[in-house]
Image (cartoon, rainbow over all chains, first blue to last red; front, side, top):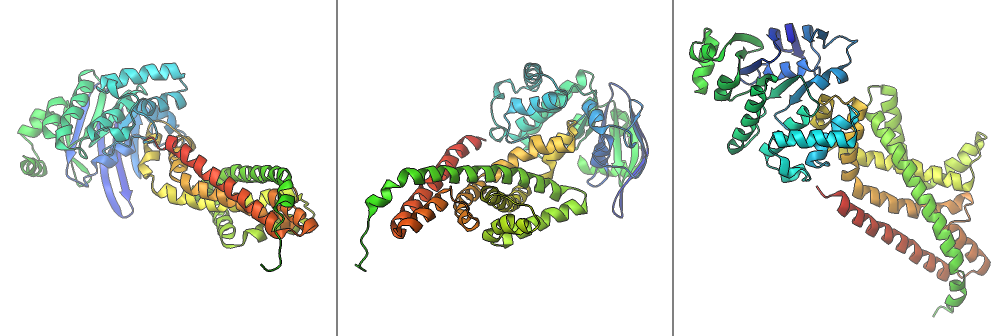
Amino acid sequence: MIEIQNVRKSFGPLEVLKGIDLTVDKGEVVSIIGGSGSGKSTLLTCINGLEPINSGSIRIDGVEVHAKSTNLDKLRRKVGIVFQQWNAFPHLTVIENVMLAPRKVLGLSKREAEEIAVKQLGHVGLADKLKVYPSRLSGGQQQRMAIARALAMSPEYMLFDEVTSALDPMLVGEVLDTLRMLASEGMTMICVTHEMKFAREVSDRVAFFHQGVMAEIAPPAELFDAPKRPETQKFLAATH
Amino acid sequence: MFGYTFRWNQALQALPQMLDGALVTLQVAILSMVIGLALAIMLTLFRRSDSRILRGFAVAWVEVARNTPALFQIYMAHFGLGNFGIHLSPFAALLAGIAFNNAGYLAENFRGALKAIPETQARAGRSLGMGSLQAFRLIVLPQMLRIAFLPMTNQMVWAILMTSLGVTVGMNTDLAGITQELNARSFRTFEFFAIAAVIYYLIAKAVTLGARLVARRLFRY
């Protein structure tokens, strides 16, 4: 379970998160929508401790993420994150990209890591690209590789930060299909996304962020068809 | 012309001796490169560290190494340290001087190379549970070394040529030292130095060509 309580975060004088409360249960899929600069991506990087917070608390399975005593490297093994920029490691082949962390972080043998990598790459539909360098892949394929790379650590939670925003429209579908598959397998996910149709389909709840505040959160049918807050109504009207 | 008669035979008889010297030259150059590379990686980490002292140390090293003559650096290692009671042999002083120089130039090359690697690469590593040093070693460093590979080859050639400065601190076993001694004994200056120059040229060329072959393997992606 991810418990976020009254989280505030500033970059210099700019407060990007103004007291966020959100609890995500095991197996739940929560999508976060909202305009640029609403703080949704920042929240994800705070959840796995890549960015410090100014106040409030984030707990993952009861462990305080931002406590000094917390071993973040260890905690991040169970919270995978995939970014808008997929960050393929260009000097490694696709299978080496996926094997690296299981080998060096989890200390698995080459054979074990290979087994996991082959399985996860097959899972995201890249079984025929194992020995290829990322530069030879399309954006969608690289993004799916990044998802496989995160999944290879057997995370219990997955954070997706606008994973389709940098993709050619033609390639968005294949990545969303991968996310749908994960959701249907029961993965706990928080997806920051601009794909409204996708958010409506896969999410248990959808949160609308506006200027650093979570303006509204509700099951998708409710949020999309009968938004209560005027900001939400305005945003949804503009994106349709 | 000019009343000088070439005596190539006499000079060529000394060729085996000179080739032995060339091996020593190559040895110093390779060692200086290995040590210089390790030091340059250390300086690069210092430059990225949170400590002002470490950052200042690295900057000072790079500044001195790049903006003072290599000859002075080798002199300092031999005679300068000698003043403080630290006596390095000509071999050690030459090696230390060139390694110091290499480290400075290579660290600067690495700085440029790092600019070509997005910050998000290390971040992606961290998000997979790697520590910051681990992410540097596994993700940033291999890319950095590849980007800086050609400048590194230049530095290697430069290191080979710099070894000839060893004669100034009494180095007499490398190619320059041996050539200098043969010259002192026979005064066939032109012949001996011409042969030595050809040998230096061939070593440098071999390094460049070898590097090109390695580069082909490195830059597969």
